[in-house]
Image 1 (cartoon, rainbow, N blue to C red):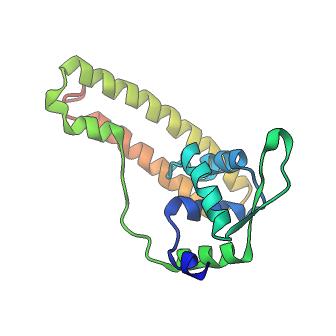
Image 2 (spheres, rainbow, N blue to C red; image 1 turned 90 degrees about the horizontal axis):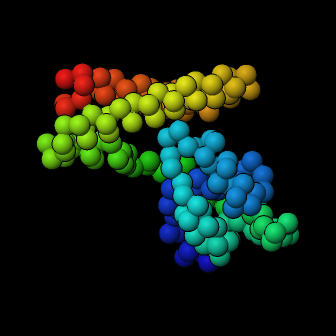
Length: 177
């Protein structure tokens, strides 16, 4: 078991342990909490969550609670899980891993039909405008709870949405160019 603990954590496992500091949660609750707390800047899929939880349990970083309704399985962080999470926090964060489907398609903009590219940009503008409005509302709620760290990450997400919208204003092949 000591050798397993030395392998460290991947980002998804670390995110789950971080969320479990708030208390025991089922996989579904972890998904909802991850979407709410981390979603503006970090994506976590259902398959990642359900793949990591058994591994975390096997490694002794979480323990399984009593099954609930519909066989839902709550997980709680263990002392070992808290230690490995604290170690993960102290490690180098590594390089950002940007995966933006809009930018991937824009990189091949010369291969698009002009109308197709303009439609893509219009769809993304609508999506990012709506997400910006949602994030601003979330930020208001977080500020009421006086959660400085969550507020800071939401402010980052707001700036990200603004930067995408600004880029769309001048994107080659868009209606603004």
